[in-house]
Image (cartoon, rainbow over all chains, first blue to last red; front, top):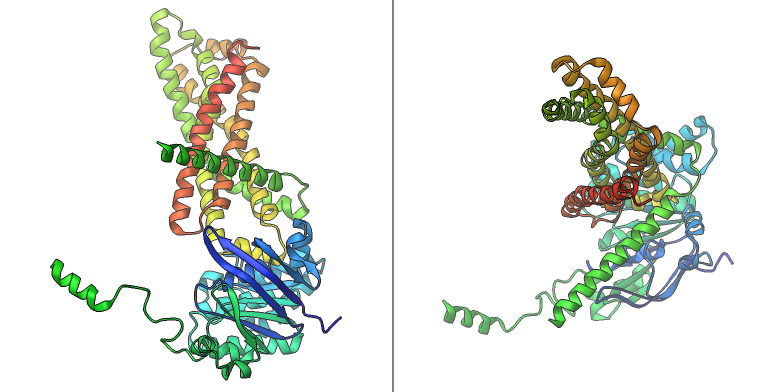
Amino acid sequence: MTDSPFVVVEGLHFARGEKDIFRGVELQIPRGKITAILGPSGTGKTTLLKLIGGQLAPDEGRVRIDGEDVHALSRKALFRLRRRMGMLFQSGALFSDLSVFENVAFPLRVHTDLPEAMIRDVALMKLQAVGLRGARDLMPSELSGGMARRVALARAIALDPELILYDEPFVGQDPISKGVLVQLIKRLNDALGLTAIVVSHDIQETLSIADYVYVISDGRVMAHGTPDSLDVDEDPRVSQFVHGEPDGPVPFHYPATDFFSDILNMEKRS
Amino acid sequence: MIGRIVSLGRRGCEVLEALGRAGQFLAQSAVGVPSREGWYLWLRQVHFVGVLSLAIVLVSGLFIGMVLALQGYTLLVDFGAEQALGQMVALSLLRELSPVVAALLFAGRAGSALTAEIGLMKATEQLTSMEMIGVDPLRRVVAPRLWAGFVALPLLTVGFSVVGIYGGYLVGVEWLGVFEGSYWGNMQASVDFVGDVGNGMVKSVVFALVVTWIAVFQGYDLVPTSEGISRATTRTVVYSSLAVLGLDFVLTALMFGGFS
């Protein structure tokens, strides 16, 4: 049972209005590993996390977390399941009216009956793990982007979740913060043995910590495998994305009419 | 022509869908027994929407009572009926002006703030992160605000009436010289507790439900962008004002229109 995948996505279809976002996505997220979901901007990676977390419902297909069909659960059961999950948002999404300490203590206060002294110890341990114990009294508005994300990470692991979802954890970070976050994600995973899903388009940082990788494009899984196998993948679409080539199957130019005839037409008009 | 009918039909469907969502939202957030922490959150919101609205509501009530007395006196004195000033001020306030004006002020002061606050929490993903922590934002964020509004507005309306009647006294008795005994005596004799005070409070409770419901739903349902927040805040004030004035007519017709 422990070898079975922790998260299974089967035949996932999802559309926003007329636009198909996913057309039959299949994923198996192994237990206790870091799985990266990569893909160009606008492919719906964040939407995929929201579907896994039950914030959105698919048009077709199923998402199972540890055997439970997320979208078949009642609202109450879904909230119970979410207590076993943590999520790191792109913006950090800290509660703006609570201090750093209170943000981290929040999940402990609402989901446990621990005495105040214990809550304090656990929250400080989590803040120590992300290196921000000294910032406990600051308000979210006083934090830099990187610090806010680290506090959000401390809050996400406050209840020792079994699954943690990272939504673009490295986006908009300076190199030092990026390095800190890469290390933290890896270290937390090793120390706590939790299952992690990292959604990102920062290839190098993500591949350096991922155990398994899915590349999503055009509403489907384009490739999957270990970081090493993707690095040598000969599929031109995978190769273009993994090596960051500006032109290839995903064209540099947005579809347009012929350049020269466009210019000539312009000259005629003027 | 066909296009217009289609667009009218689509708009009708959207309105019905929004009403359905709003009804579901109200049922999910307002029903249930609050926890001990829920009471604390509720008290904080009563302070935010109620206590902080006191100044604007009481000052407006004072001025409206004073204006009523001034206008009433100039009319009544022509008929030698200025002794009925207390009765006129009290009935106007209790039956009509207090519930309506307090609700309109509440929509502008507290309703718009509720929409903007919840909307900003949505735009900065705070509501989503709360959901992912396993805490239902409808219970934790929306419910305390809803119940605070339900309780605060009727209390503010009482304050409005009391201060308004006192404003009428200041102008009518202290300034224009109406006999104090007839100001209070006529009021006491003509105001019926159930028919006037009670019906005014019923109006106020209905307005509280509607205004707070509109405000929190607009915040929760908005498009999470700065433009979305601005539009939703405007919608809160516009929809609340129209709902209050429209419902006031319906309730007045039912209570005082002689249909019963």
